[in-house]
Length: 136
Image (cartoon, rainbow, N blue to C red; front, side, top):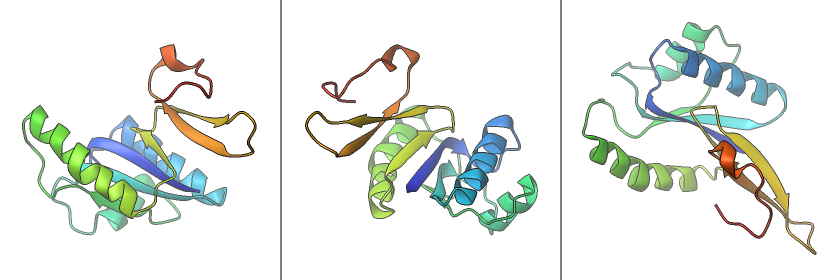
């Protein structure tokens, strides 16, 4: 499964969110999935994939895509970049599931009278009891 792990800000921060994303991506590879990371910006680091692998002590280089090279913008500019560039990139990379900042819960809903499985992204604990009749 192609899984996008989304870091809304810098992928080059050495923090808990990026560490979690790194370890989650490594585990998903070991389970046979095809994860990739999408970040707003990379903090102007060249060869970010190699840096990310070494900084987090990973066995594999994880594909990393950024919406822009330099960070810093208004929140409106950030939102527009994610809406326009982010959605385009997720479509181009054929993401089947997107996990935002590695902290959202992903559920699978089986449509009634069908064997089709529809992945949905749960971003809020209040939405955990959704059924197939709800859309996200």
